[in-house]
Image 1 (tube, each protein chain N blue to C red):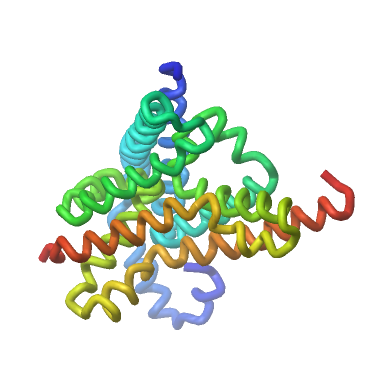
Image 2: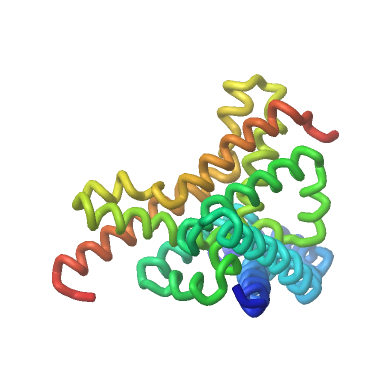
Length: 119
Length: 159
């Protein structure tokens, strides 16, 4: 993997974060609103077929920001719908993202077992 | 505040609103954006490094390397949240720490830790997705709509 892939990951990933920062600072959205908006944007871009090329181009710069969560949900739903018909939208929606969601639940739970809230 | 809401206020309230807006400290938007860019970019570069490692040394392909990468990032984020370090990074990085998947893990872990005093079922289990839930709810619903629209278009012979 070439060094330029790291550079683009930095630039595109940082750029998506700047969009989030502008939404928070200029449009006065809460972090939750910002993240939800980015997820919906990712889903719409995924549906239009524009997000995958961005991941091909920027690697983790596009797949680490939360917008990729929306894209992955659409991707899983469409891939499964292709195989099993319309019900695949329901069964496939978490297929690609299950690693992220499960990891967040598991490590979050373990964290609550190990750590106490800071004062 | 939207104009619609503003019209409902009495003149005194409007005056107060104007005064409050003037006194509110101006946000250093430019500086915040630069910080968000640097921190967010660094987290994504770290992700790229992990992805490269999984492809190079653990026989993952470009398509499958995303899962372990995200899992490791979430693990690191949950650990740093538990140690109280993530909050300090977030204070500096703003959206740079909130937008990457690490921010999602941070909201889950911090909500879990914060509510453990209410018990594991009602506290941890019930509040885990207090903040992250909106991301999942809106993500899944919008993905559902997008997928249905796309399938319908395909059925009708377009695209």
